[in-house]
Length: 409
Image 1: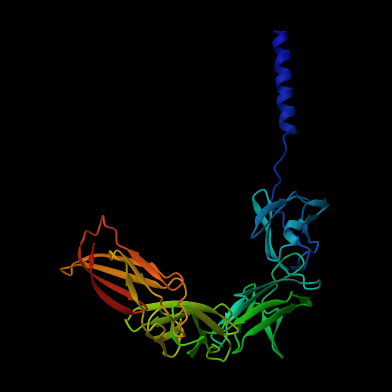
Image 2 (image 1 turned 180 degrees about the vertical axis):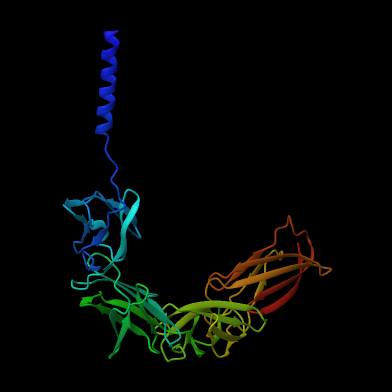
């Protein structure tokens, strides 16, 4: 029995001790806190400390938040004064910081701080320009965008001044812009002449690098063409050269080097021929081989989708007036020539000669082609294909046709 009395005494003592050692929850109903720090506007990078005076010493926490996040700060206490140091991750960002002083889920105080960009130190500036090549005439433009920031990379406030200078030829233009919604921007219209516009910007003594916009010629306008050649004869050997006038745009700028000019040639049979050239200093040249027979050409040049030339007539006289045809004894070897050109010289090697072979009833059997060598062309009619019989042969060279009735032995 005595043993049980000892156990009961021990339990009572333990209960009493545990009850007295339990922490008491602080009564917040009579606690008030007042912000001692009067300043509520700071510059980015400043050291920010908030101090509160309370009617009683307490462990209130300070909850702060900005657009990037939220954090909780514990106080440094000196009797009824609590001090909270705002971390650098919040003080270096230009924006608004909202705070709440909380004790046991009760709001003791709330407020906000405004942090503005630091304009006392050198400004950083990012400048963008595009497009970097525009068309002359005033309808096209390059856009300049400037984003000034402080040394902590905070965008500068609205109405911050940005000075833009651009130079073309001998003229320098100065514009003063104001930042709005983080950027300052302007458009730079193209002048009527080709060249380069040099552009720079200045914000709070910070200069951008030199930027360049190239002014290209506008679309080509109509132009004229002419030709040069060694002679007027259709010998199928010489080259005729077509040359354009200096091609310009509507503002009298010479078109860009490399502009493609298409020369379209229509011959007397209505067949279209084409050649092309690219401009150098506004002039395009293209070449064609002389025809092999008397011809009349009409030549027109085009800058596709933009301009065209005059219609240029070009006539070629026949270089070959006649030729002879010689047959072997069995008529199976046909020799054409010598074929002579306009000065009685032998025609250049490679002149096309065509032979069309019909039977006695004028039914087409075959067509053969060859080219001249040293003024002559030769056809051989094989006995395995052309049996002994009457045939009609048409020879065509340099636009001249000759018909012969022969008997193959």
